Length: 448
Image (cartoon, rainbow, N blue to C red; front, side, top):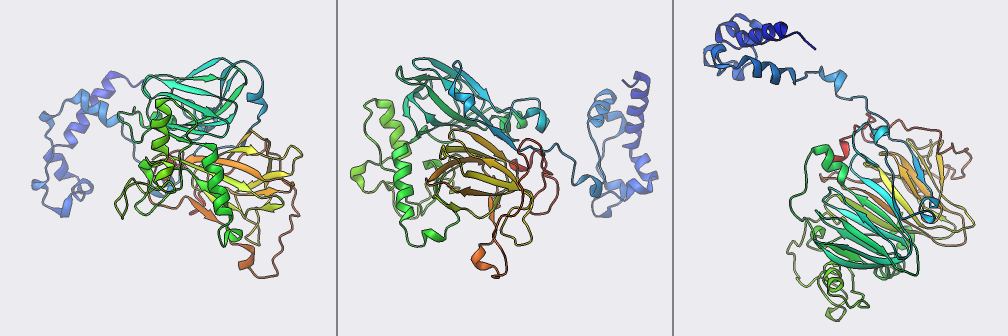
């Protein structure tokens, strides 16, 4: 610690420097004034107007860096991670967090700079309480059935394949599994973002929402039969809420009416755009171009969620995201043959990931893709494979996704045969480079 007499001397020097007489004597300082106005017209504090102790304290908090050497700061790298389904298939009722705080270099639990993901295992007939300082919480039911109750949002029943989304919740959420079956839930929140900013949520930015499994499957089936669907890089649906819809969107979300509780009806209406099946194909009541929400078409203002199907004996071209991706393998053939290849670069053809890491899917497992990494999904099995991807939303209008060129758009000389040997998923840390400028990605880039 700096001796008190040195601090006092420093404080006096600072105070003297801020006097008009000292400013006038310094040619370097005299040039740093708006419009090169005369020094006598530059507003500044006089020495006798400054509290020396406080001046020293606040000035010592500041830092100045040379631009070209500091514009691309060295940050801790985000690793590729795999969380197997075995973690939630056995053992006592508990929360199983995916905590990468040591890798990312923050003093609070996180799975990415802005998100925290966990498995919830709830044994049959038992209850598990969770809490989060978050604006958004998403609960995807991997298996089982039960209900979630909070003092703020009431009771919401759920079953395998349902998505429950809650806004800020000052009270605990108590999850109860049905007495006949164990339950597992994939839980994602934006708590790390709020912890990074040092804030707490003060208002609801959307209403409690439930998107049922039947709704999702019906919509995927619908788009799979649309003209041109075979040319899409993805066969999937983005999940959203009324708070994030746009003026021209007409989502097909009919309500499933098999629960009789009042809370289910209320939440179901929010998920369905506040319409019933009898009101016509689940479209929002209000028509025209009136803006209904933010227009981001995301799960919440901070969470982005995709349910994607990968047909048998098919693959998706490489693509990459600005943010860390947390992918849940909803279903993969138990015989194997479903996997993701990922890496920071494409090969010379521009259609395949160069020297990739291979991540094999297993039903109920989660894998993490670092920001800016190219990745392609492959299904060599005889069954459809399903994946639910979660990431944080871009708070700006910058693009979230970039895809590699389709092979049909490249010269016929390019080969598409995988001849490389994938690296081990547990033995490599990414370079964590921004895919736009190749600079190192900082831990706060996802919040921009």
